[in-house]
Amino acid sequence: MADTKAKVERALYGPGVTEVTLGALLSLVLGGALALVYLAWKPVETVKEVPAEPAAGLVYYVPGSTNATKGRQYLRKRQLLVEGSSGEVINLSEEELNAWIGSSRANPDGAGQGGLVSPQSINFRIQDGVFQVGLPCTVSLFGVNRPIILQARGGFTSDGESHVFSPEEVHVGSLAAHRVPGLTALVRSRLFDLERIPEDLRTAWNQLERVEVTGDQLVLTLP
Image (cartoon, rainbow, N blue to C red; front, side, top):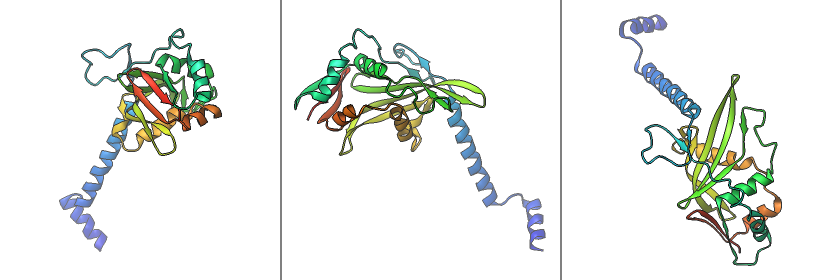
C-alpha cells in the first residue's frame, strides 16, 4: 500500500528533493570527470618561447636546451657531486642536466613502456629561478595513440632527510593538475620514478647541504 502511495505521489509531484539532489551530484561528478579527461587529452603547443600575448585557453610547453656543446661539463660535475670536498658549490645548467640524463638512460625499460603510457626522455629547463621538468608521453587508449606532455614547474624543499622537487604548477596535457587535489603528488612521482638513479648519485644527493635554483642554474652545496 505504501509503495502504491509513493508511486502516486511521484506521478503527481515528480521526484523528491533527495532524488533531485543525488541526480545533480552525479551529473556534476560525471561532468567534472569528462572535463578532466578532455583537458588532459587536449594537446599543448610546443614552442621555443611563450608568446608575449599567449592565446586564451592554450597551454604552452617550452623544452629546455639539449645543446651538447654547452652540456659537455656534466661528467666533471657528476664526479664533483660524488667526490667533491665539503662546502663545495656545483652549478648545473639545463644543458648539463639534459646531457646527463640523456647519456645515462638509467631506465631504458621505464615504467609504462608498452602499456597505457609510454614515456620518452625527461627534459629539464631552468629559467628565472624556476626549475621545469617535462616528460612527453604517448598514451594508448581504446586503440588510439595520443601524444601528451607532463610538465611541472617549481623549486626544491627539504623534507628533513633529503631535498625534493616541489612543483607549484603541474600540467597533464592542458589539464592544470595542481588545481586538482592529489594529482600533483601523483604526477611528480610519475616523473621521477621513470629513472633509476645510480646508488652513488642518490647517496650524494641525499647528503647535500643545500639545493636551490638561481637564475638559470641548479645550485648544489656539498655538506
